[in-house]
Length: 139
Image (tube, rainbow, N blue to C red):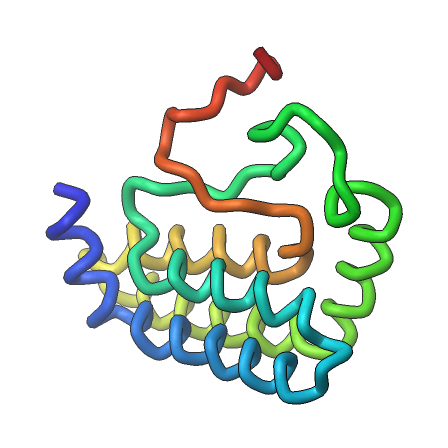
């Protein structure tokens, strides 16, 4: 089912939004100072292409330790990201979600776009894992 969901996802806006993430990553990489955000864009861009069966989680939950992206500097990075690029990707995901919600078959894809829109607001300090591979209680 994951494979079928991902194939239909690409048709229902996933391909364009994945390209949008990668374009944002390229623009961040060109500026040199945006390299930390570029890495996040490319990782989440891959997730935006094929999201079914995977989820975004806080990197500290996966590794068990705080790092530069999951601490206070990560919060500052997320604020800067939101003001510069995050808002535009979030709007793209919201528009795609509304378009998907118009059709009955597109509702699951609209929900996925809304999840990605939320991730777009604060991607620094997140990582992508297989669904169910990380326990929620921290152990």
